[in-house]
Length: 141
Ligand code: AMP
Image (cartoon, rainbow, N blue to C red; front, top):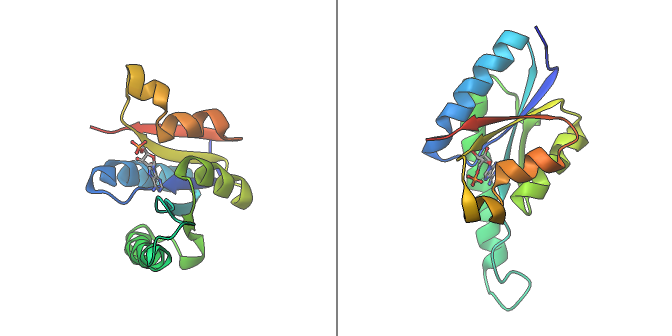
């Protein structure tokens, strides 16, 4: 059996992503992998212009994401140092963090879009094409 040493699970923290978390948890357990969790907070539109309070809202989003990741971390036995909350474009941040912490597998959900919406680019698509490591996409309902 192939064993991945370090697995990064990127979660949008929505209810629909439970299946991604569940499968990642089981796979990591079976392979004895080190597990890391990532949530990305997208910069608010207009940030950098005169949008008063946007930095504060962003900070609140980061704090809320940290709380949710901590809860998830407890459930999956992932320690705080392996829980990442980053601000930036999601597609870029997932592959950047993966490289920075040296994972050999990224797990993301995929809605399996077709046609135009696929051309416009899903997160999973971008990660598959930009990552330097293997990527497992979990089909979302
Ligand atoms: P989407 O392209 O929005 O359908 O998202 C597909 C998958 O990309 C999700 O199931 C997550 O694995 C990942 N993803 C999307 N948004 C985020 C986010 N803000 N932070 C971390 N991962 C994300």
